[in-house]
Image 1 (tube, helix red, strand yellow):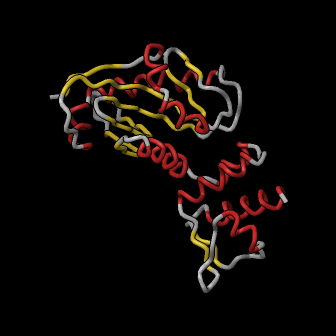
Image 2 (image 1 turned 30 degrees about the horizontal axis):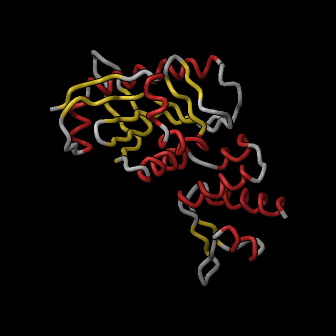
Length: 222
């Protein structure tokens, strides 16, 4: 039965990846679709929105599928949406894909997800890595780049406060974070939290216990 569930999930994710729609139920077992909370309309069209795709992907991993296989059927926007959704549930306001154009003096930048709660700002790089090995050179490079992006964000805090319609004046704390698909514990690399997505909600809830261990940057916003 578990194999049937996982095979159905993968087929749904594969067919819905491009536009979130499956035309016809393609021989899917009705009881499995109902168990997964996926329903078609009277014409057999199934709409699988981003939230449902993320739910299905996590369900497949929980049932033993390899993460590297599952994430190949998701988009970057799916992954960013999952992270933003967790932040919103914890009282943050969010921006996905925050971009600033560069010029002749400075390169542009992009931060995948920014979450603001009170005067706390999370600057998150979303890495859809399905590999283990948190000590890899690619992870060290990602940590360094996220530090640089976060410092740039601090320097652009006035623009961010207007975009987020910040209502609280004072000293803000900017925290660089990397969220990955790694099924491991939360790690700290050069003071930057590297958080498996399955641990991200608990990381947010327990953030105060990490606060003295992480690197952050402050800026006064008036």
